[in-house]
Length: 438
Image 1 (cartoon, rainbow, N blue to C red):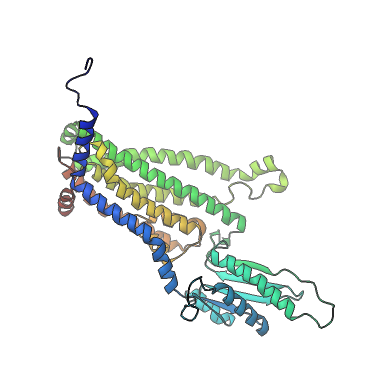
Image 2: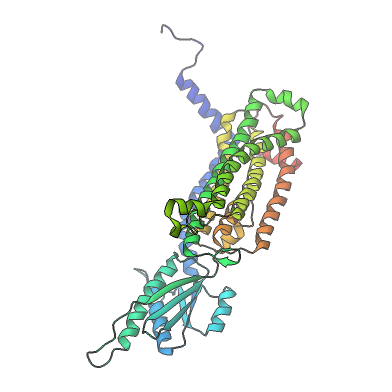
């Protein structure tokens, strides 16, 4: 054909060669098996959650100084929370909730010890209104709190109907009052945050976690891409003769980390200025009566500092791993396959942090806040919306720093072994051999 370069292979040959080279690699098989397992785990996750929920019995105590009101509250809450699903045998079905009466002292001690999921305090006010308070470590928006809010209305209706006189004269029905007394509410200067501040903290927590996730993944890929590009262009051969692998690894992490820190400063400085002058800005925009606590009501310098610490430590941890990973590839195109497991780890930390921001303080959330590489995401989320003891934050940071030290030693040795591998695929044997040397 006229005008065609005879040395240029056609698209079919190029596609077949690329497909063959990638499929035959051992890393492709290993990553396929891992991703297949993850996909199956995600598909079975709802069934697993339902299975463990079915095996778990949640206990709720009802406290009231009026016996008849306590009995009605127990019956209504038990009937609403323990509705059998369709298709099950009521004779063999196991109730997921145990609702029982208790005294205030015993219920408070059991709640502190984790034996109870919540305490329902029910009182009849002098006006005849039923007042219901749920004391729990969950947030007001949890599904259990919403069910118990509905139960409070039923308790009020039954209590009002039981006190109807024999004649026609009856006291008007007063809608029951329901509130959630969250025991794990974040504090500021020893003061529990209000509803507006708590909602603002949750929103800011989502912003911070998303920023942390994006920066860790993007800057980590920058590090890996920089290493792979220098290796593929043979610039690495010149650099390795002028600097040690450890110095080159440190330079990569510090240089790109400085770029990320610049962005953090660009975010933090305007926020700090707004915090310093937020009352004046509110008075100017909204008027004198709306000045107190209007803009950025949940943001504080302490939270910005926490974001900076966890951003810096999280980036260093992931960047070291990304750099060692990038040293094993001969072409930047191979980074996509290697970076996927690291992106999945960051995604798990991100999703767990979102659970923590939603008020879920389950065992996995608590464990993940101390377990690298998830702790930068999850502990930051817990600090935003929960009352966290200082020793817990210190322990999380200490474990993260120790993990970075261990990873730095292994990553520097794997980096030294990887940068010398030219024309070889980043197979499992190469990683295992480098890890043994580390």
